[in-house]
Image (cartoon, rainbow, N blue to C red):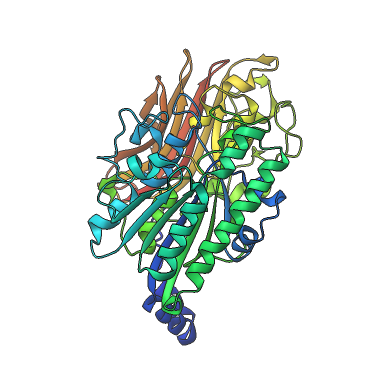
Length: 495
């Protein structure tokens, strides 16, 4: 899907809808934006839904809910250090370089926390962070934050909550981060399948209720526009623990309420780094491309053509490692796209015969610990050519499949930019090729992949021939029992 169609501003949309809508938007714009981010260490969304958690349930019903899968090794293990660093800085571990809870070699000077970015962009705003796990406030948040509080162990989440409630109720903070730890503690001691874990969620739900009540009880609340975001750094296994690549350990989530969030909505495109970007956007701080953030504001969704396929996704056919109720694949391309399997071998695993449109939950369940979990820059539904999984059943011939884009408008004699995210793992004689044709002519190779290119955003400058009016892109993957290639977020922007 081309990004040439520009998103209208909320005010412009409201004006187009009529005077009443425009007046409503103007009143909302006059309110003072404020942000509250609450981190629930080690909390699983599915267990929150199982627990007695009325305050979190209410926030989900009045806001949006999104499950966001984590990475795994070799990018980083599912530990608190990498998890909170990703949420707070807005970049994945390959940028902030936190691989464990020691924070050795971190790149926070290059990728600072979102409160520090707020202080830099708008020094007049007041920022506050309080945490039950000291590294959050001692190491991840910088000294530029107005107030950082590491709660003494003896006070734990009770002290963290009381301090945050006092600031929210009587202070005049513009951005607040609160970290609560007891759910993770229960997960380690008793496991995520335990009643103690549910009890811990019930307890932290009450603390979330106190924080939200403090916001809503402010004397100035009527003139304020609070965006409340609740998230987690990792999940837990049923037996207890995290750090590995299981779906439970990789599970994180975002619950967001307030701002421009649609009440009762479910999103599939949100990832962990979006928390930082969304906080900045709500406070009127534009994300500078030079910051090289991975997060994008939840207020500014950028769906692509593949995401429209989600309602069409089906359950497994041949795969045995994927749950029978997990919905997550189709071979039918979106409108305007096509797949050429004329040179494709026969047999193999049905789900992966040629280019497939799938999701993280479905694809990573096919086989763990082969770097599928590090496909972090794809969102929602993406395209994958997986010769490795295809070859798990008897095949004849080789994997040779081409994903073909629509014919996009270009201007002859000028340049165009082809952008996409790629996640490619190499094993000879496998090869990935990007080809471009103009006005239906012979496709020419513009990029070749014969080495690992993991979770990367590509931007290729194309020189459009004089007189050309359209360009079509092809992604051809050839191989056998080798590895895979993921493509997502494909755009072609004419200059």
